[in-house]
Amino acid sequence: MKVPRLFLCAALATTCLTSSQAGGQTGHIGPSNSAIAGGIAGITAGMAGIAVAVGVVHSHHVLSGCVVNGSNGPELKTSDAKTWSLEGNSANIKPGDRVKVHGARSGHKKTASGAEVFTVDKVVKDYGVCETPPSKAAGGD
Image (cartoon, rainbow, N blue to C red):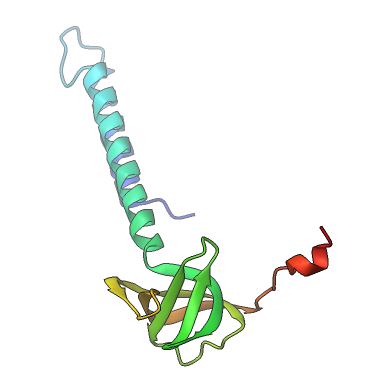
C-alpha cells in the first residue's frame, strides 16, 4: 500500500514537534499540544476535502447503463432513467450492451428527442448483454 507524501510529511512534522517538548527542559519551547492537535486536525480536514473533490470530479466523467438505438445514433439509458446521446469515440459501442464509459457531459446540449449529450473518450468496461426487465404481462397481476 502506498502512503501519500502528505501523510508522511504530517507524521514527521508531528514527531519533530512533540519530541522537541520531551527534552526535559523546564521552559516551554515550541508549539503547545493544542496547537499541534489543531494542525493535525487541519491537515486531516484538508486531505479529506481533496479526496471528496477528486471523487466527485471523477464521477462526473463516468456513466454506465444499457445502450439502445436512438434517433441520432447510440444512446445510453442509465439506472436513474436518464437517457444520454453518445458522441465521440462510440464506434465500439453496440446496442443491447451494458457498458461503463468515460468522457464529458456536454453541458446543457440536448438532442431533438430530449436526451442529454455525453462525449465518450473511451469504453471503461463492457459488461455484455443488458438484462431485460420482466414484462408486466408476464407478472399476471
